Image 1 (cartoon, rainbow over the protein chains, first blue to last red):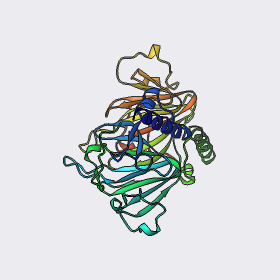
Image 2 (image 1 turned 45 degrees about the vertical axis):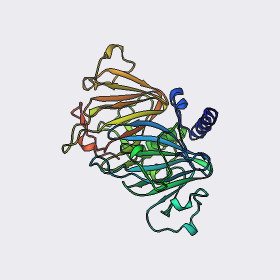
Image 3 (image 1 turned 60 degrees about the horizontal axis):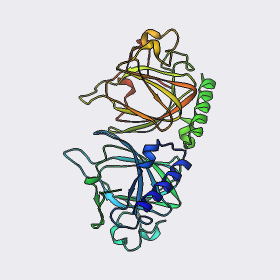
Length: 178
Length: 178
């Protein structure tokens, strides 16, 4: 795993650099690699840089490798606060975002990761190119997949509590990440 | 003013482009130019793109022309909520941030705008280069100035309410901006 981790980090850093995003050396070394416990990072996974995560505000950069999927989940209320509200803004590549609403798997641009199709249930499709963004209300199911060139997406949100996220796929473990 | 506005917008867009930041055509046309009512934009002013500003989260890009200063202000509590908490992350150029704490005008890297020196009172100096960031707690006086090459700074914060900001300079009017 250490080699695979280092390789994923280097690859994510290359995407960020091509998006014009500068990291400190410490941030570059600490890029988070999340395989959601499925052990198939290329297919289902996400690379993250968390700039700030306080009780009130969170900001991250998300990197998706070509065709990589962040699996379906929602952010429920925690401790009497509404769930996480998040805005995704595409910086590089194309990201296909699926949220609750009108839509059909049969006509969607993306296929869910093979073997996990039963864990993808929302199909309202939003396609984001660089400069385009979409806000997801709290407690709303969503998932997203990069196009063939991968993607870099900025996330602006309320507090992030990964441990509170609810994934549709019962096999998924969000934490620990690497 | 229309010509000056268009020129300031074009100039701000050039800084954003050099920082690798992509805007939609609508966003580029709507870049906010704030001269704080002082009528000396080159010296005291700020150019802004607001990506999102909900009841809970706000994200912006700030552009500072070479040597331009955003004047001293704080974000007080509003409607029983703590004031705005903001994180500044430098993307391009150098930004000199001054906040409450130990520091001395005599040894600071920046001079306040000529004629308004009496309205700058905090001198803890934080220098941010690309990839570096600093978080300012609510209700804390702060001001910032770009280095000789200008700067682009991402701001991640709680809700932004410009009309609630308290400026040290009584002459300043934050709104309306253009």
